[in-house]
Amino acid sequence: MPRGDKSAYTDKQKRQAEHIEEGYEKRGVSDKEAERRAWATVNKEDGGGKKSGSGRKNHLKE
Image 1: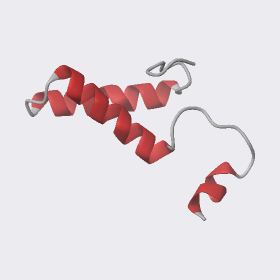
Image 2: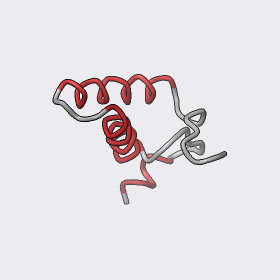
Image 3: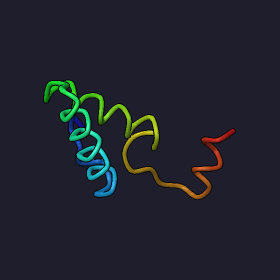
């Protein structure tokens, strides 16, 4: 998967990023920077794209 490819993200993550991006744009951040910040926020909160495996969340909290 090339860098910047958003296909590994869930629909919910994509909606979250769009909503966050709109908030940054309302505050006067450029489109490109707003998009970068939005995806960085989604990655920080969810740890990236789709993940599989039972107990994955508990493993991340250790």
